[in-house]
Length: 81
Image 1 (cartoon, rainbow, N blue to C red):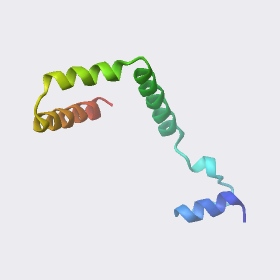
Image 2 (image 1 turned 90 degrees about the horizontal axis):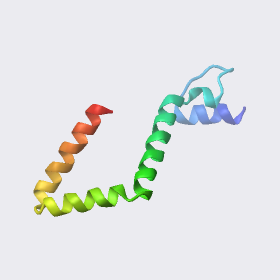
Image 3 (image 1 turned 180 degrees about the horizontal axis):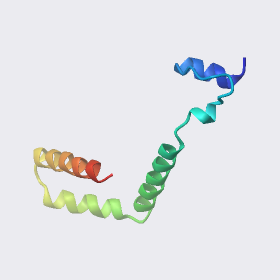
Image 4 (image 1 turned 90 degrees about the vertical axis):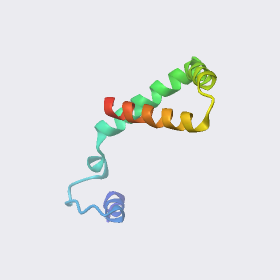
């Protein structure tokens, strides 16, 4: 039994005999995650995330307000993406 079939069986996939492991991966999702990772690392390396966090920290003094702001920002970003 090949390694691809053992992996598929371990994850619970019941693929046919001619389906290999790369065929079980949803590649558009992997590409999207890789693009987001590259974008995040680019923003981090140029200092944009540090500047943004400093601006948020100076404007929001209360932890509860900060938590609500971050949750609202997550909801908005989730709707966009």
